[in-house]
Image (tube, rainbow, N blue to C red; front, side, top):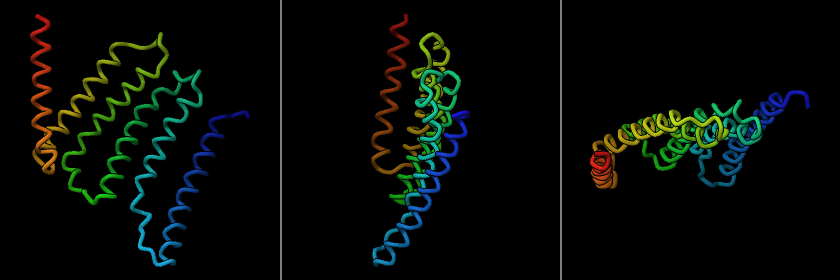
Length: 178
């Protein structure tokens, strides 16, 4: 095979077409059988498929992963958004978007951490690790903060405990350094 990238892109397009065909066919068949099922409630699976399409080159070309390791960031963003939208679509909890948007910075931090963890050992930098932790922590902080204001009962109970735990950890870390 001359160009593995073309093979990969063609395969991904075929698989995406099959997913669309399955959604349409399953919905049509189930309605004909009298079963009320809306396959399009699973539309976030398309976003999860895109995430897999971004993750795949990292693992397919493992020995040359330093050339494609940057795909981990968009892959992580698509992964978190796909899971979030799948939850919202299946539970009809679209109101959670008032605070769940803060998972986007978390997903960037997750992608940066994946770049660090999956990269070649000789090219790992502590700056990448720290930036992933900082960006991810900021996203989680805002998720907990806004979730405590706008979230449901469970989030309102758990969020203050998480904030207290993070505060104790920050204070403990600063006292231990002295």
